[in-house]
Length: 112
Length: 112
Image (cartoon, rainbow over the protein chains, first blue to last red):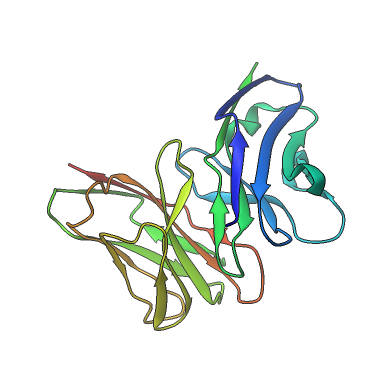
């Protein structure tokens, strides 16, 4: 069955520092992978997705992620954190054409 | 504006009462979803519907019911059989043949 594991439930970074959020997946078929962001008491917003093609995917707000099949990973990065990046981030993998399986989420705190 | 609306944003109910959460979309999407979000557990799928007048149970359907009488509407009823209904509920939708789910702003249900 398709699933994802997010390593680290909380990440704290200084403003201007690198943001790195880890996601490993398990899938019996070529996966479609997603990163979503959630601000407090709001819905989820798509940051980026990998379906096929280029393994380095660029998303909104300066985030990017790299699909590494050999490591079964899809880690999310941003070179320089901004205060507005404080949120919860979810990695997800497609189970089939209609369903997604979500990780438990990683909360990012940005220190001034 | 196109989008997904959920109402109300906050909902309080007494134990033993049924309550219905609203989800409407004007994106002409075929599929709609209901998720439950609890701290540290990510999103868990309650029910989903691929077409009008058809829906399937997700991973945690017990104590919930849905209907899909119109393409744009997918209400969720939390029944008194749901043992621990206090949570944040998210509705999502997706166009048929595509891979991305889009989320509404959520409803926070508190059982008193």
